[in-house]
Image 1 (cartoon, rainbow over the protein chains, first blue to last red):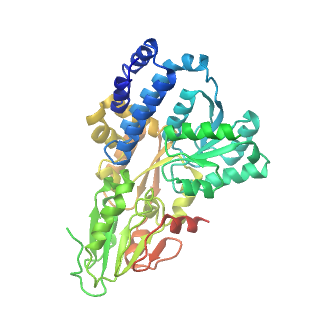
Image 2 (cartoon, rainbow over the protein chains, first blue to last red):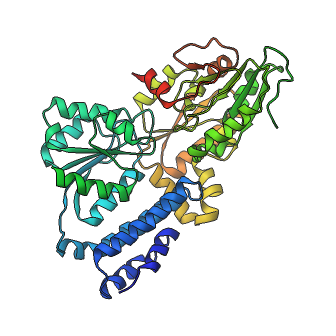
Length: 211
Length: 231
């Protein structure tokens, strides 16, 4: 059993070259996937703090996110074959007129990594498309991302569309993105807000239990 | 340099982002005091307000009005205030609207083609065009391969890189740099006729409600002020 410290260090440094091997080593020496994921999340939390204080910038964040997704690739067969299996279904996308999807992709990586089935609609997704995809996939959760103060009101537009089409009661809505706050997300009619990928995992697990 | 009131009673002081330095200098008369802050502040919006506030606090009490040359900038200006005089703030979310001449003009461009990355003289001069960022910011720390990977991911959903020509800077040089960005990053080239109108109005008025917020002495700038204008 190890404390995964080497793995955490690599995530913080954004050094992805050996991350796959290190993850496999942890699995081989008996570390539970939940523990490995928790440590990876811890690494990303440190990266998130460094980003918000200005010590880290976008490339650092993206390198660390790449570490996460490579580690999750190695964990995937173990997680899928494990006791916690599929946690639920999430449809996720960035709202209309917003081309930013790096943060949303990080969240997607986290959710897939812990065992959610995620349908990623990409960026610049209209409220009509969100409603259609919710209808088609019947997810437990809809994730809405916005990176601009000019597009974050679209979160409310999508939720209104879900209400108009009778879909709102069938799906929990979680919102996030750099300018979005808990207060704003809830005021738009979302069920929850998540500040980062780690938080999104916790909240989505809670939302699935409620639904 | 600290803002001051050496221009005398009835004066205004402008505290602005360096990205609009050329445009503000083109429209301002010599009695207007212009103070510019580093262009990189938008990268850390949580720290931005405190740095702008420091400059506002240095303004002498006899100054009538402090003019802020920033958009909402990812919430970076929320919380700033002037105690003894009013603030004038552009009511745009993204300062690129200022280079278009009005929020209306930028709004139309954004709605018709949201996947456009805009460049102006200030961005190119500071090497904040995508290639400048790759070579000057990203590559020294992360290596050229990672630098390109990051920028390509950032611009993945962008289809165009547009030069907004306000008349500032060497147009041929700006065209050349914009085309170079387009060629390397495989985007379509666009050129848009910009305007100095927003900058001129920022300093001298009139402060139309569609483009400006007038903040009373002691009142804080809030994000809600910008969002209410959108509804």
